[in-house]
Image (cartoon, rainbow, N blue to C red):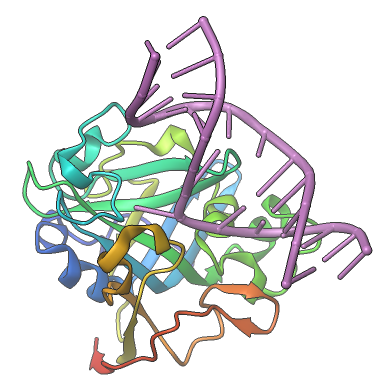
Length: 224
DNA sequence: TGAATGATTTACT
DNA sequence: GTAAATCATTCAA
């Protein structure tokens, strides 16, 4: 896996589907970022779906169409990047048809390529693989994803894209409620988070402690 | 024009 | 467990 060009990149048809399907199918795919200072890549092990106007947890709820959410109303496969808490970036991929403001939040990856570069971009205390990208903010820092990638077409870009992993073993995919969306009323309980329950690289609130979706996994499926 | 607020992470008590 | 860091976006006036 020394050469990571766009060969094997997921096509637009992958993203132009209902957001729940895309979120589930992102698990086990490879996120690749090629930068002048080096290439970083990791297997997606955690993703969340944010669905259209009716989802109170989504920035696009109620059809809110602003400068920030604009890209979500466009065609699938583009990057929706935004800042939260004034310091962290979050990376999403737009899904569905144009006019449907849906996106998948990539929350965690299992680092595969460029571990040293990820570590250098993160704080000096983040040296273990499971500390590099086990959370949406950490992931963006490790992959150097910022506002500069807002609106980027992942289906055309050769610098940032999702790719198929040849010969990948089937992964377990569990579901739970999303994290950090308690304000969303009944939508907070929806099981819109997908993750690999066997991976040590999913997000954590504290080292050694699994993030706490109060709901236990209820759906575990196998898929490639 | 101004105030409130996060789809979080980290450090400290 | 609790708190601080930190600012673009959003909404109210």
